[in-house]
Amino acid sequence: MMSSTRRTIYKIKKKKKKRRRILLVLIPFLILALGATTYGAYLYTKAQSVFNNSYDPLAGSDKRDVDPMADNISLLFIGVDDSEKRQFQGNSRSDALMLATFNKKENSIKLLSIPRDSYVYIPERGSKTKINAAHALGGPQATMDTVEELLDIPVDYYVRMNFNAFIDVVNALNGIEVNVPYELREQDSKDRAGAIHLQPGVQTVNGEQALALARTRKQDTDIMRGERQQEILKAIMKKATSVGAVTKYTDVMQAVGDNMTTNLKFGQMKSFISYVTNDSGLNIESVKLEGSDLRLSGVYYYQINEMSLIEAQSALKQHLNITSQNSPSSTTQDTQSATTQPAQETAEAQN
Image 1: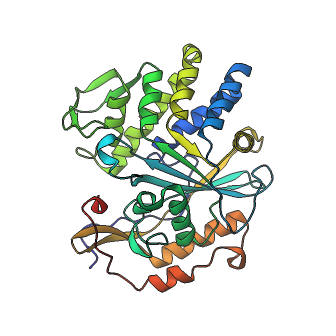
Image 2: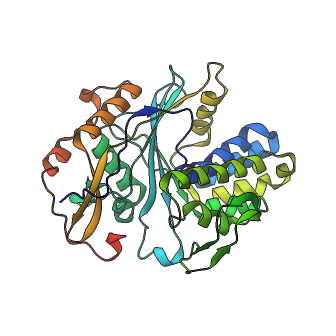
């Protein structure tokens, strides 16, 4: 039964900036690309080395072959929290998922953030559950397959980023200056309750403190949380692009490399630079999903609205310039959509 007391509405609308929440995943990737293009030959070589060490020869979509230098492509960002307490056995659950589609002719990007509790069909499992379970079940490959199944488009590449990268980047920059809006007591990345304690006011925070401030949900709205995250990310970029940060960039890039895996090669990553340097300017749009709360067997899920999903699929297909005929089949998904009772969840699966 859908809850009428809480309802989250996501609509398709244009934006000139990336979603603030998902930037916790994107910021280390962007910093690595920045180091590869801004600070000369030495850091270019370092960025290349970091990327090569992070490379995972995992195949992309089996629906098509693409060349990022010439074709419209899709890229799935997977944010994970691999703190020791959350590792359980094998892969952890994904904590953030965002699909980005890139259109060469329009020099544009569409971004779709997928709520982590979305109730979807997972091919690796053969039944429906939270989409964040896909990574725990089969890592990036199972996650790519699940998103492909959900959106009925090919997922060409992925970047998997551990939230530790966010912490390590801030630490490599010797902290960032932020305004803490209220007294904060939060757990740290190792889930130790009350380990982070901040007083209100402008101050320099380390990586653990910055992450706690960015992710806390206790004392403000989602909108205010997004604004707070935006300010944190601005502080990171300001520090990362300052003259004094150049000497720290080796450590920054190493921090990213230690926490990233991707099936993008370095030469392919460089293709994204053209979107930023194009004289026509970069157009970034958000494609969002409408949905509502759902509880099954006492477990919370996010139920994606069917019409909103169709609209999102259409927008992404059009942006990639593909048709339903050459996109992945949604037959399995349609067959499973009538099934509402999930398989038995473990305690870990309910997180």
